Length: 158
Image 1 (tube, rainbow, N blue to C red):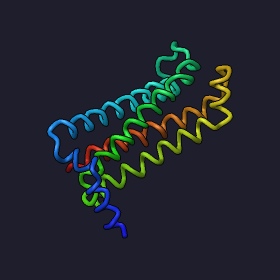
Image 2: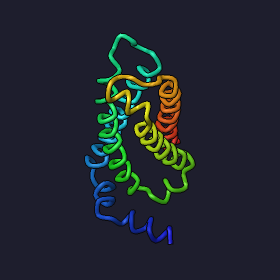
Image 3: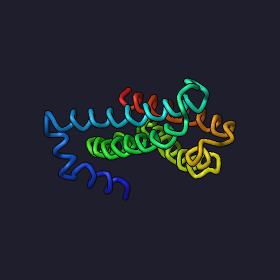
Image 4: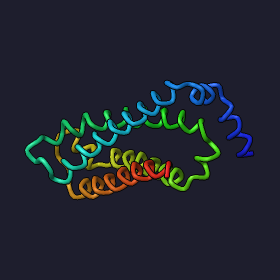
């Protein structure tokens, strides 16, 4: 059943276009990298600030704005990643680095959702007040998850 699904994905007209065009695949790949850069840049800036770096920069405006930037980057990265997956679905589904990356992306997005639903996060966004210890721990975990996801992604080709 999985083989049938993967065969259908590989035969999808979009996958065929990605494989056939000299320009479409590199463009989608470049968009994937831009999505990752946007996602990771926003996450690193916010997480480092939560960890105390650049303490002169107000945290509340960053906490209000950067998660939206990260979410936009994640949306672009996931959409383009799914398109890139269609080119070699049998190879990717068996690739350990791809499997690890997929799990880490789900873990990172889930972690962010849990943190953003927390009382400490809501207090930070609402009025700048919060118990910072829990958010510092969450920021460190976030950095580890997303850095690992990017490293796993780079290992897919090797």
